[in-house]
Length: 287
Image 1 (cartoon, rainbow, N blue to C red):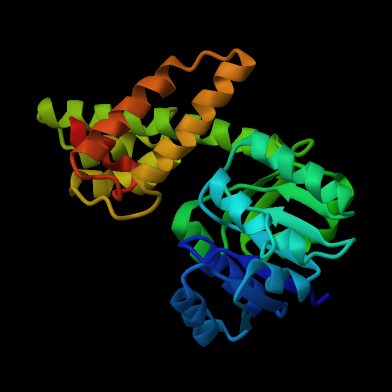
Image 2 (image 1 turned 90 degrees about the horizontal axis):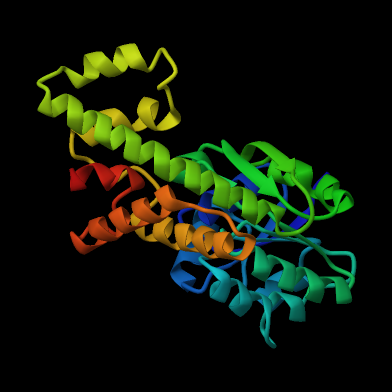
């Protein structure tokens, strides 16, 4: 079924995600704070662009958002030109931003008072996953809202799952980032060890990737790490933002994350060395 979709936020993730929706036959209206990015999207995919989140929401049944952080989410949702100034009762808002569980719950309360559904639905898969329509989506919210937009998520995702009440998606994304940080640091140390020991790291990885050490990071990043290339995905600046969210949540729920806290400081070292826009595998550069 063709849906009228508003897509707010055309960054490295949102731009291709909105494009997949348009190519799937939906009627997409976009808003981006940088107007020339929205114009480039229209030139590439057709669709429409508008001058505010409010105007985008007024023309849509489903509103998708993919912005930077909690403050960005509040800025596009609230106020006289925000999404909530243009929504109608019965609309559904799907927030793909990686943000705090707290802001997700805050938005749900406001949406509920307006008769609007809200789902927090952060994604994993990076820029390549967004461009190829192969994202994984972690969703929090009511089942009825999820079922109503599941086919839309399918335009740009290979898998999505409802994990609980609003906030559950963000909490799951925190777990995702915690796992990634540990995997990248372990791979970085192993490759550094292998080089220092005089081993052919490519040959070793060909062996150990067939066993229990295998990971997505190993399969997709070890070659670029050894080549000193770090322009293949999720930036260190954004990873530190995500880990900060996870570490703050851990303080609230009593979790101990010693390894995550340590690796967060390793990423701070990468930033100090000018690698804030390098991808997360750049942990290797510290070694």
